[in-house]
Length: 368
Image 1 (cartoon, rainbow, N blue to C red):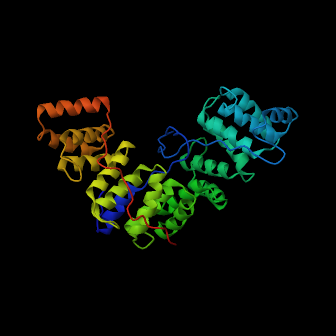
Image 2: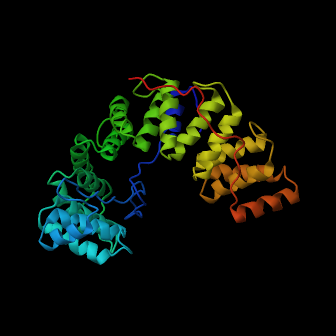
């Protein structure tokens, strides 16, 4: 990704730089052609109180046997996570069912997670949706967000963007950052309503300030390109840095672009290469392509056709056509021995070492 002053081109590049929305833990396989931009639900953390300790297993079992729904849910969580030995999915499901029958919304949500992820049961999005709906109708924020995601993608329920937004907004108003980010994505993409970058920025900020990495990256991208907010490179650097710390590969690559182009920082190709390396190692195609370009030209790193070949090849394997084209050009510059060495490196998938450790220099503080 390279920054352009041409506004239309900048918008196209921004679409490339935006982190795909991701939920915690894992990835749901695409269903019926739905885009793979979600992950699977995370289990609700157990309820704690002055009278019910999650760590007191004996007391949990005693109360669960007496029909205490909260104790049943918390004990099921322990079985699910294998905190008292090996995971016991069947016992966990049995207790979640018992707790749900007592009206515990968290247990209903956790049953939804089991069916969505196919843990101890056959994967069944329709059944997952039923459990999520019951919990959502009781005001459970995570369930509201999950049922919204199912409606958005048509997994187990009829695809309905309006229904998805209804549930996202319910979760977002309770402070769920993943739902806030999905609402922001809708305004950015113009999905279901007019495109509104300013509104997108406001929702991204709400999620970003809670530490949600994709929202931090996307807010940074808006500041980077001046969409919905005034162009502000220090703010872009700040939020890209936060997102990079949260493991968002696109943010690492964007930091490389900022250093490469001298946007908000002194131009530093070594730092650009270091950030591109971070992104490349995380599997970011743009980072792999950008890093290979530096090695091919010897900019910020020693000229190294072998490492350039390595990263172009890795990106090309994932379908990056630009990298495939660059490989053809690079081969013309390489000796037979270099090609052999590069192919050996690719077959062994040895990571390329960064030129220097990445750092954020003069890291700005956020202002509102």
